[in-house]
Image 1 (tube, one colour):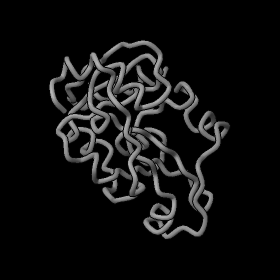
Image 2 (cartoon, rainbow, N blue to C red):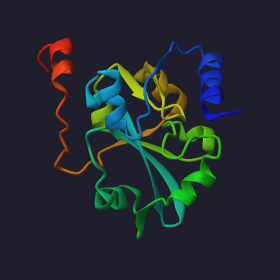
Image 3 (cartoon, helix red, strand yellow):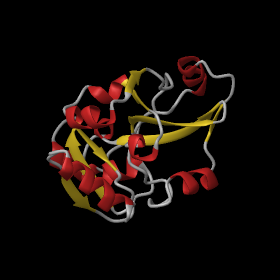
Length: 173
């Protein structure tokens, strides 16, 4: 079963209302936000790190970056590094590389969510595919995943300017 099918079944089995959106290929969470014409802070970017030999999933808004020093402190880990593509392919065999959803519980992996992702009632995620986005209530995500809420984003955000047409469609940001 593919990742998206597995995730949708899990959400349905747990009574979660969600919406699926199809878009042109988007390899990053910021590109998903652009394709779906939504603010970056609503899209959960997934970063997998290896902390003292154990894989850990981090979820944060698309426009932010992970501060590995903060992650090391948060996990009380001596060594923290980004997971390699080979490690990701092995850990998420049913997902397209780099499109894993922040449901580490489905992969026996702890999940940490940066507190900045908790401020909106809805989040958008990649459900294992680069051409699909899925939105769901943050409360349902938190109920199913039971992530640890922490603070691990880098102080300086990378801003991505919205295309001119998106600004007109959405009004003032």
